[in-house]
Image (spheres, rainbow, N blue to C red):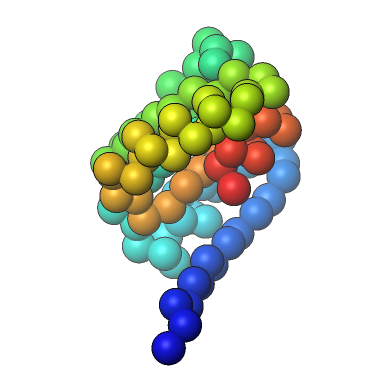
Amino acid sequence: MPDFYWNPTKRWIEAGGFKILSQVLAPFSPRHLLIVQGEKSFRNSPFYAEMRNRVSAYSIQEVSVRANPTVSQVEELVIFLKKKSFDSVVGIGGGSVLDVAK
């Protein structure tokens, strides 16, 4: 019997969309979140602390992604993350961040 892969995905693009993050996550009942973000712009913004407060009920692992990462950089991240267990992945940022989060 072939392996079955199920990937329930919810996407939205909205300025300040993290304000409804807990509402979006609630139907999935996650416990462990992976937050994928850029190297510094979001973390240095005033929105970072607000986002952290909104997801404080969850166990969180954050990873930073540089712009235009190489295949080997993404593969290193995948190897690291395979040792972890996440219920949901949240990408906050631009193209490279969202590509890696997917």
